[in-house]
Length: 232
Image (tube, rainbow, N blue to C red):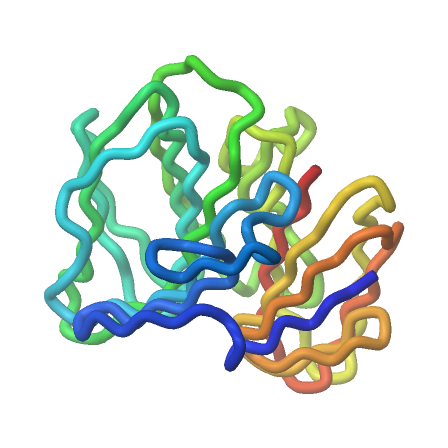
């Protein structure tokens, strides 16, 4: 089963400095049919204006992944961590027992990113933060695990849940297969381009909610960048 969720039909809130689209219920956007997808709780598609951002605010008991599409985001938190995550790179914050952080676009241009929240399956642990560069050239024509709760994904940023964040770039006409497993759920968004997944077509920033599919075949109709959460 693959359900197409067109970009034009997801939640939307424009705060001036922040233009946010919500694939799942978030803040003032509420849809009982879109509360979560397995352990995936939030997928926000944010455009953050230059010299603006989120002031310090708290989180706990959530795995928060930021996938930067264009520009860069600068992170500061109550643990003393500070870092700049640029386009194509990923940062992970395990909120654990509690953390306060701020996220700012200190650049002269708008930053676009996906912010993804996944419910943890391990709780009561100290908070943590990490970031990593993942050059797009290294994931051309393939899907690469960027964050994972599984020990076998040794090169990925660790998260405390039974999920993976996977991304790749696919040239027009190419097909990449991904073994999901019929017992798992996937949520896939093309950041750019146009794709076909097991016969279902999606444009850039559409969502595809996937269940009961052992393997998915992702064909790029146009040169595309795809991001996938694979979760229980």
